[in-house]
Every structure is written in C-alpha cells, then in structure tokens.
Length: 163
Image (cartoon, rainbow, N blue to C red; front, side, top):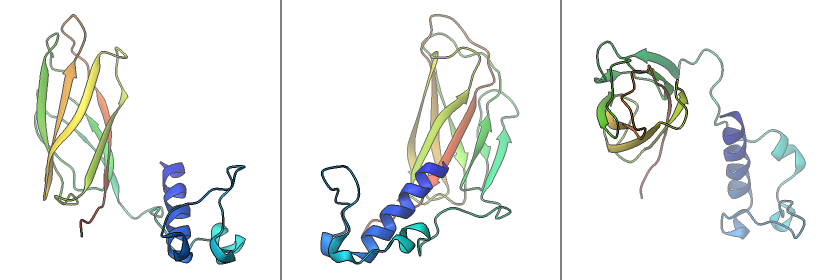
C-alpha cells in the first residue's frame, strides 16, 4: 500500500509541476523520469506538494467480522479488513454480500483481495454494483470440495471523479 501511495504521489507531483508533458510520465531511454523543461527539482520529488497517504491516527482504516453465514457487513472506513464467517461454501459455489460503507461513491473504485485463507488458490473475489454507500463483494469456491474457512479480505476505496 505504501509503495502504491508513494508512486501516486510521484505521478501527481510530475503531472502537476510539468504540464508541458501533457500530464504524462515520460521516461528517458534508461528508464529514469524525464523532467519536462527542468521544471521539477529533486526537492519536489523528495517532498511532494500533494500528500496522499493518511497519517497515523486519522482513522481511515478498520476491521469487521461477519457475524453469521456470509452476510452483509458495515464498515465506514476508506480501507480495511473483512473477516468472513466460516460457514460452508459448496464446491463451485459463489456467494455475494453487501459492504455498506459511507466512504464509497458511485464513481469510486473498490479493490478487494484475499489476504489469508486456509486453502490457497481455492477462492476468487470480485467487486460489483458500486453505488453511493455500498458495493457487492462476491466470493467463489473454485475447488472440488465444500470449504468452511474464515477468509480474510483486504479492501481499499480509491476515490475517483468522472468529469
């Protein structure tokens, strides 16, 4: 997460400071960033003017555990962990549940991945129906047997605006 935020800060600094590149990150033949018209200094890269990463104690992250079965959860945080209930999921079955989250807007991107599980490679996860205040998360069992595991999911809400 820290690498992604650092990369986003770097790209924002480049696109804001040097508009002659049209907002694109241009690279030299050796892979180093090309500074348009010398308008970006090393000091700007070391201390970007846009801070993307939250500081400690801002309360943007959190955790929630499904109480029963694989049912809806509520977590009003921009990122966090969902510990799913260990109810059985049959072979080749899928189940969807709603994540109610006041930080989600219909234009946002919600990313979810499997953080830990007992049987690696036996599940897939997707996000759909992103709306103001919620999204749907689908988990599927791709194994040949029924599994009863408390899957831990990580999620992040990436704020986005469509102009």
